[in-house]
Length: 151
Image (cartoon, rainbow, N blue to C red; front, side, top):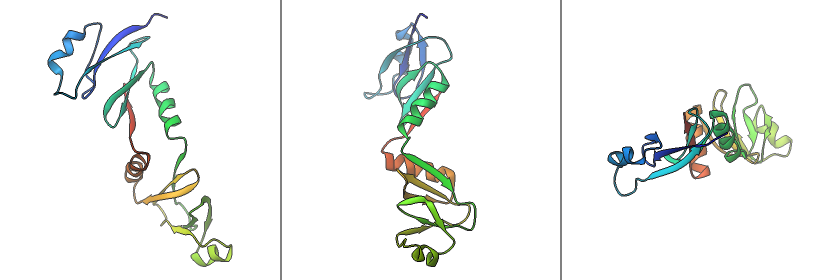
C-alpha cells in the first residue's frame, strides 16, 4: 500500500498532508518544528511523549500496542477487598492485617485502603494513590515520561 506524507507540528500536533508550507504560520517559538511522517491512510494516530509529537502509527491500535510495550513493566491494581496489606516485593501477596503479614514472614508491607490504587514495577510496589488518575500520573513520573496518542 502506498504511503502518504503527513507533516505535523512538534508542539501542538497541527497537521496537513503534502503541504508543509501551510504549517509555517502555526509554529510556536524556537523549540517548535515541523516533522515529516508517512502513513497508509487518513486513520493514523499521533504518538505523544510528554505532550509533544513523537511518532505516528497507522492506527489507534498500533499506537496502543506501542504504549503498552513502553509500560509493560508496570501494573496498576485497585485494592478491592479486606486484604489491604500488600507485600512490597510481591503485590500478589496480600494480607488482612499487618500481624498476619508478619506471621507469614513478610515485614516489608504496604497498607492500601480498600478502593485505593497501587502501582507496581516488575511486581514491586512503588506508589499508592486514592484515584486512578493520580496513580497514572505517578506512573508517568516514575517512568520519566508520559506516552499518549491522539487520532
